[in-house]
Length: 87
Image (cartoon, rainbow, N blue to C red):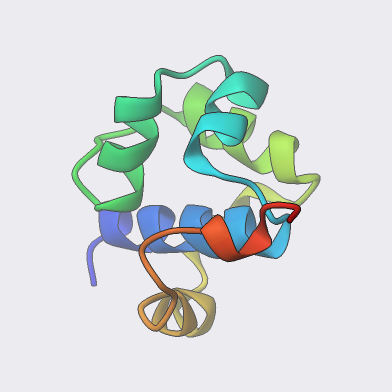
């Protein structure tokens, strides 16, 4: 798995753990929603500044975004977090 894929999958994992939609996470990070999607798909070549911003938004250490075990778990997550929205 590449670093970009690891960060993308771990971003998705922590976003789901925080029950955030991509739109909500975009509002927190000030990234565009399309960029969040690019990150989570492993297609974004992130700067250290953006990696730190993502980690800070989840209140985790940046190195956790490189955790392969969590990334593997993230592969099994559904594509949407609609199930977390209040009914």
